[in-house]
Length: 224
Image 1 (tube, rainbow, N blue to C red):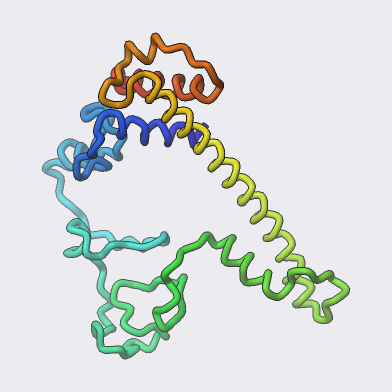
Image 2 (image 1 turned 45 degrees about the vertical axis):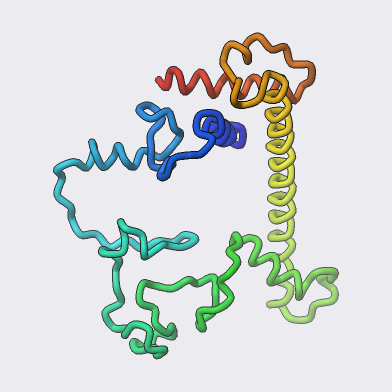
């Protein structure tokens, strides 16, 4: 159901803004009829005239754009590191770690082009060593412990992969239904709520598509 909900947001952006305006993701459903994250409204209403208090926040995520207009002037800076001199000035093992460090890569700052889930990284790491082996092939207790850990990781990885593939198939099926439905009732330029309600789907995919579009229109017309 979560996948369908996310997809309806995508659908509404296509129907009501064939060329989404810049910063659409910062807008707000109730006021702007766009499924954004309400940043603009937060600044104008919740944070208006409030004084700020300095707080250092450590981000454990997939990265930070430290050139962003909201961050570039307030980013924490490592006071013991000299920027861009190629030297580990504070002797902590990381060269030029001015704003922190991307631990997905190595200490040389390389190998950070592709970001995977921790589950995927662990699966790839131990697969090279233990794939195709059994416990009887192992000698040390450490290897046996790692092998048992790998089997658990493999099980979780394969389940995640199966779920992801099923989700992709579901969304792909919905997309095909939407494409078909929109074409059958005149395409996006001639699309309307009235035509949508009048159209009788002839397949399960277009029936699902009609349900999603009606739900999307209803939420946009009456956000409450």
